[in-house]
Image (tube, rainbow, N blue to C red; front, side, top):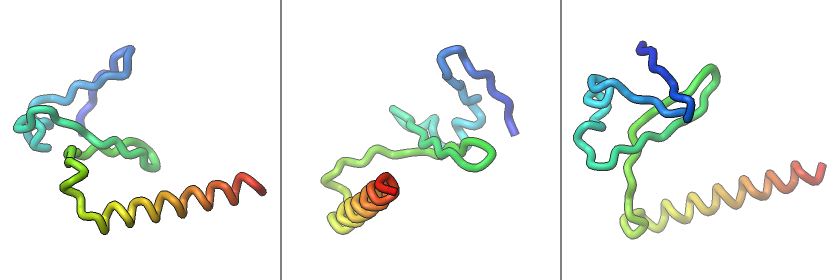
Length: 79
């Protein structure tokens, strides 16, 4: 466990040993995904991938999931 200061603007600075452990020190433009979980935040490395490199089946699955989420949202909104 590591304690990090949070700036007034909400910025965090990861110590070098954590950046190395996560492989972020080897990336030109490192990015992190921040996932809100019960009790806190979970950080994990993210990678930008050109859309042309994503399989079409994966894109269709994402669209189907988004459409299902929107349908559920609209149904809940009407209640």
